[in-house]
Image (cartoon, rainbow over all chains, first blue to last red; front, top):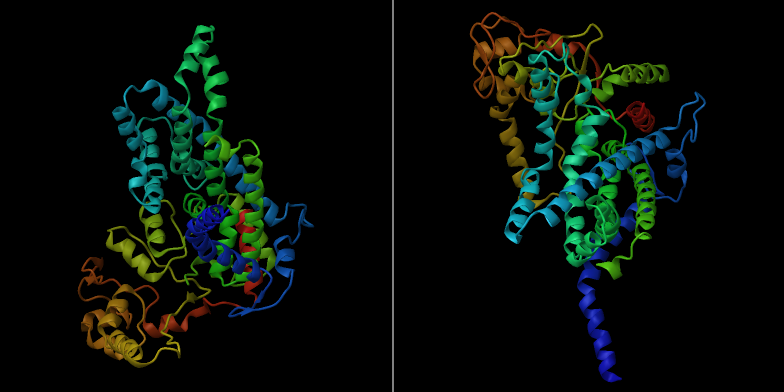
Length: 295
Length: 200
């Protein structure tokens, strides 16, 4: 009895440092954001209050403005969701294929490790540098346009290569495919190789093995990767800003514009709404997998 | 805070303006908006844009790359911004001494001359003048033709002998200011309209 109580206490003590870090750097700031979202602000000061006006202001003109347009918030969420879905789809296919290649087609742990490190090469430079380097590649006078013009394939530069939906998705895929590769690779390495042999012995074609054996058993990795990618894209404002020429809407960007003009309460309200939306998406994804059981 | 093109677009807070701009955005009028000095320089230098609302020293920076770039005064006048020091009253003792030492250094002329050679105007012109060559002062402040090549603070040539600064003298340029970048009374409305413009 006494020993059980001591063990109980030890467990609490062992968990407390992490709990304290979370409380200090996550729970308290989040509580502050929630609090400020009910405040008011003038051009120069925050005024403590308890008003739902900020939340009402976020949804001004929703769902449809008198002109027949979708309201700004809905339009922006739609745009952000579009980027999330596109990025998720492309990174999932790419991440799965690369992880599959690394896990099943590469012999030897050393080669696997080396190739894995090669995948991280883009992360050796800073995010901003990586994004800025797209300009000389995709710009009006960039390498791609100059090459195509030099080959006589086009007369005028292709405009949509940069500062467009295309360039935003391209940058996202470039940045986040790694977040898919790692967990999927991890799941694949745990698959019992005898299962693949059994599938082959039972007459499954290679594609059938991938579809009916590897894919279901990589589900955990795929879903963890999806959580990373969806959460990162939903909250992004830097990539959308730089690659979209600051002209493509995203929820993060709305918050950024508002904070840079000192409108913290409405920015906080937007942040709370975004958090709720992302949490819902993650809860939905978590229902597809039991992380504790399968990790 | 860097305000850049935003205030220019919304200097007249007329909803029809926003609608007109949103229409132009959809039509592809705006290639990119900038938020950062270097971004504006790179957009111009790479040929990504051909006309933009730009800071005077950014135009200088494009020219020092050997690319022709004109800072064109508009008949509507200039949009200006200013920055100064504010010392919180909580700063006392040695920290306060350090603050004043820094401000004294900043205003003693070297930094002022550096700023003036970029095309800004420093806060205390007399001390800046003492640290500049007469021909530099004549070009940047008096609007006179350059008697020698004008160099940037880094030593790159940015204007050839005989050229005249856009907009003329200090008095003429300061006299042509039509609006100041500032947080305006309708700040909240402006930000809302801006997010609307971006979402369009």
